[in-house]
Length: 388
Length: 164
Image (cartoon, rainbow over all chains, first blue to last red; front, top):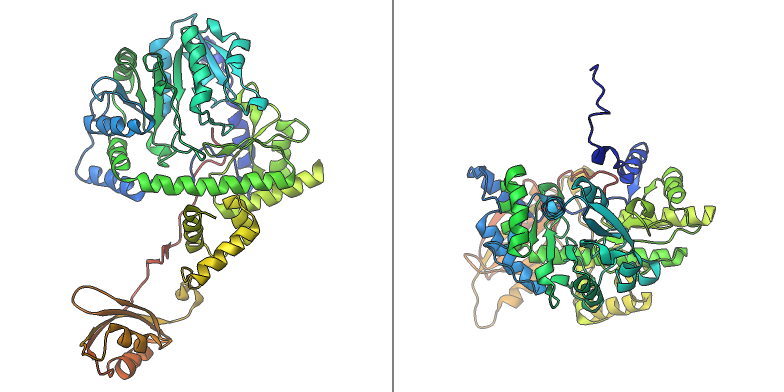
């Protein structure tokens, strides 16, 4: 055993950030044998075969060197072409950077754009990394809790009530993890208005953009006067079922992307090369695979929403990502999730793990086979009947 | 149900024809009645011709034999492809029959309880048909994929049970 006490050595901004609440549930779930998990934040599909095959082929032909810092030119061109589906027009030259997952992209933005003392408004409930990421970058996170009565959408009032007018930036993710909420172009317009009025930079995590079930995804960067103040993040993890290949990208004004690239070139250097070959193929030839997965998710979403309704758990109609966010009968999401796991061996994540506004709700992922999903819903039904 | 949903329903049934009407109704956000009516229509229209199981007979310890048979025919004024196909298709041993492009005319799949039975069937029932000029039989040695289903052991779900 080492005699050194590292407690005093760990940086304060790291020490003060608690471990993710997800971790505790993961450990609880691991103790059980026959768990059906609705707690997984990634697709149950594998990446489309042609993308995987392109990765294999790149390895066979020895494509194992670094790429350009910003990613292979070919890939950036495909990304630029693909982004036009959402009315986003960015130059492969200096407005696109390929990152090691969206996670790296978001972290790059935090580190490249924020100074100590900057305030970053973080929409909640949200993916668990934003608040720690802002803290690690030395800036101050300001939680902006969305409300169930707004179906967990961001609104002008919610931003104002949280005091976001003094913030330097706003981070959000729509379609949202954990709620499954999506925002229409019209709804984004008032967020855009708030950000323009108060001069906020917007970091828009749109990694679930392709998994929108009712209408087409809208990006805030496509709204008037927003492109110049927005960085959009997207990637291959969710829609292309490529979580483990770790590939994402950011789109933004050249100055912002250039600053992010400054950090990237001294830290990550370049995103994984094999993954980049897979991504090129994914963008060129896997749209049908994505659409097929999207439709499968949609059927499961309908199945789960209708079962929740039959069970008597209130749930707004989540229209994106692969999550639903039902209300827990007595409001105690932590005990509900823990007891559900113990009594019925179904894992779901308590909403409070995702920050303010998540208390009293449960994140259920339907990125699970239909048969298991059905079985999980049967178990939840008897659990609720027995306990509530 | 609209045309897009009808098509999707067919795709779902191709993937798993055993889904209950109640679950299909939930999945498509329609009533059970809608599902039943649509399936009935699709059957009446001849879109849905039947429902069957994909079986790996080997797992059943059953030595069934299966062969692809290439068949060449010669047509005359009185006989066309449909006449010949109709004659061959009536045998229960023939599980599928297609007219194909290329070096031969018909591709048959023949199934029976043993290789011997398949051979006998070809030589006694198929080859003697007057319009058939040649047959080439390929016995199936092993199966890796059948109507979309892999015949291997399948992959385990390696995802973490809970993740952000």
